Structures are given as C-alpha cells and as structure tokens.
Length: 241
Image (cartoon, rainbow, N blue to C red):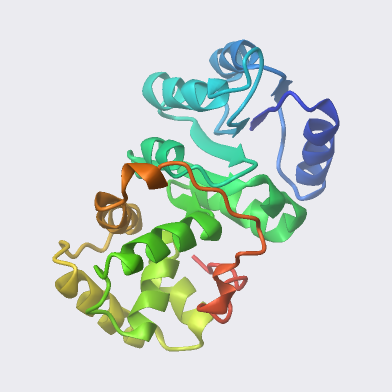
C-alpha cells in the first residue's frame, strides 16, 4: 500500500504501525502530485489518503482519490478526514466498491483500522460510524425512518458501516438468521431492492439516507466521541468476514 499525508510524523508513525501489523507500505507521499506519481509507479493494492493536502489544503486528497478510482481501479482507496464531511464522503463512496472513509481519530485503534483497510482492499467498503450516525440522525429528524423499529435502526447503521450479516450478528449478539430477517424487513420498508452483495446494499442504504439531507447539512462535523455505540451496543466488535 501507499500512504499520502502532508504530516510527516503522522505518516511515518502510521507506516510503522502498519508494518508491525503485517501490512507492507511501499511508498509515501506528501501531496497529491507525489501520490499520483507513486500510484502510477507502484500500482499498489491500496492507497491511504488524507482528504486535505498541499498546496491549498482543501480537497486535493479527495480529488486524487477520485482519479485513482477512475484510472487505477485495481487500487483500493481509504480516505482519512479530520471531520465528518458528508458531501465529500458521499461523493467518494458513490462507487460503493473498494472504498473507505474514516476519521483520523480511528487510527488510534490500530486493530480496527487494519481490519477496515483489509476489508476495503478485499473489495468491500468501510464507513466511519460518525458519518453513519450523522446520516441516520438527519434522516430520523425528517421522520423517514419512522417505520423502522429500534432494532432495525441498529441493523441499518451497521449495514451502512459496511458490515456483513455475520458481522452485524456479532455486534448485536444475535444469530445471522435473525439479522437476515431484519435486513429483509428494512429493505421492504425503505423500498430498496434486496441484494446479497454487501457493497451494493451499503450503497443503496446510503443513497436513501442522503436523499433528503438539506443543503444546510452538507458540511457536518462530529468528534469521534459521538460513537454509534450508544445505539449499537458493540460497534467495536469487528466484522468476521
């Protein structure tokens, strides 16, 4: 994999942590131009990219991630952000495959972080629970989730994080069969097509959650403490896929 972040100390620390976790970092970049050159040369399986990089520290990393998705589809992309930025996240996740969006604060839990990187590299998705919470809260405020039970909302939130039925079952301490029943009910109530493909299911759920967000909600920030665990008792239990 390759790492791109203008913060050299953070980049080197992350590279060291990943190396000790058995993940090979073949190169590092400090800006978007260096990142694109590195990806073109190394053709890595995964690129971990800071959303804001020099020279303007706006969306250079996000734009580079889009180019990687388009020109190097064999390279999965994990974008790291200091805050939840809904508009940017949804734009990046539109493809639904081999893409992740996490807050930088998640890096401190190296086990969960590595699991998320591996899931994205394998072809899945990884979505920060803070982003999921913002989207679910916004939709609930509009009463669009009014038909779902409390348990179905928990399942929906974990679906949107990119978890499989088995992973949801572990997180909620229920059987996989029970989760499948909840998923079918959710898809029916939200009028979403049922599919066994995790990334398509996540894409459908997020598309629904995004639909009624007002323009005033396009830029949202959330500290990492606004954890999904308040309504998902074991959100830190990792996916067993």
